Image 1 (cartoon, rainbow, N blue to C red):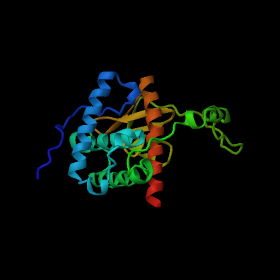
Image 2 (image 1 turned 45 degrees about the vertical axis):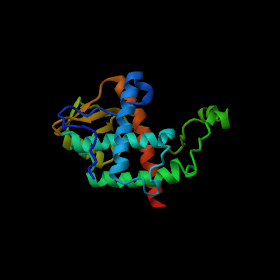
Image 3 (image 1 turned 45 degrees about the horizontal axis):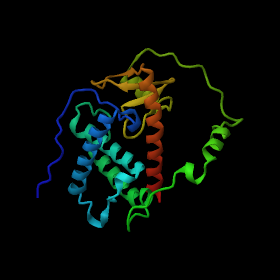
Length: 231
């Protein structure tokens, strides 16, 4: 049996980050959703996910699972279709993440959907005042927290070796496991150049804010996957 993948071709163009659904136009949302459904259909058949319904058929109704699948699609596109895959994890790592996502799909994202989809409760419905209480509480700032040192002044381009040293020493941090070609250093986001030899500072404020948001979300997803793996 031949299972043809969605059409894709290798490209030298820089890899563009995933954008939030609410940041897309209606036309862009429609196009991206069509591409995601086509990709999930292919993955469903290629990896025989109908066995024991490994991927809940109600996955479009679970926003967290949709984001997991979007991340997997993006990662695979980088691995298999982009010549700028640079520091991306290997295909073997991708398949490991696929298995973890499928395990999380049944145990975490859709644990009560075996007999039919069950909708989650919105926070505003279950606890109308809780979000405001969270806001009032503020971040966990401790009296023993070390004082911030002076901001490091850097040019707009760094050699790959310099960034590698900063990452090894914990001075810089990667965006997330799925997007290691972005890193945060000295209060700014950096992206690996297409030749893999240098890192360029991201100077667009909107792009910077987008990376802040997606990094927090995707690193949180990485943490959840790690916790599920240890169970």
